[in-house]
Image 1 (cartoon, rainbow, N blue to C red):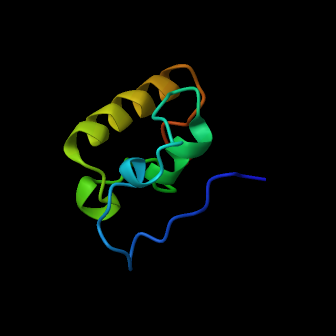
Image 2 (cartoon, rainbow, N blue to C red; image 1 turned 90 degrees about the horizontal axis):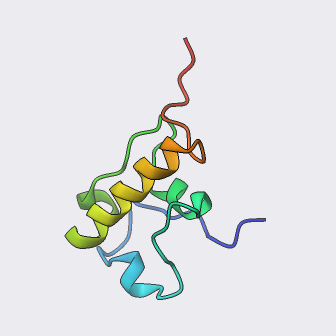
Image 3 (cartoon, helix red, strand yellow; image 1 turned 120 degrees about the horizontal axis):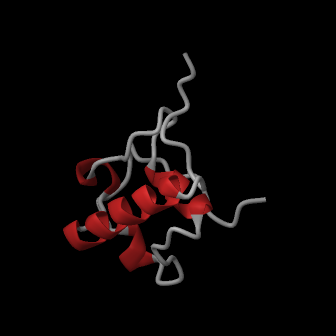
Length: 80
């Protein structure tokens, strides 16, 4: 069971989820949280959709790339 809820990105006010939930820490060792900010095809969601501020978006990107590097997150879900 996930302690992080799925976020509905369509109808919500643009508030940084990391400012709203102080318990959420951006860390590559937490792929469960990072998956919320990656599409089903493996793309990182942009700021204009998620509402994450610029500093946290840069941190988020860096940690997603680190998690992919050590195989905690997949680069893509498309298998050809």
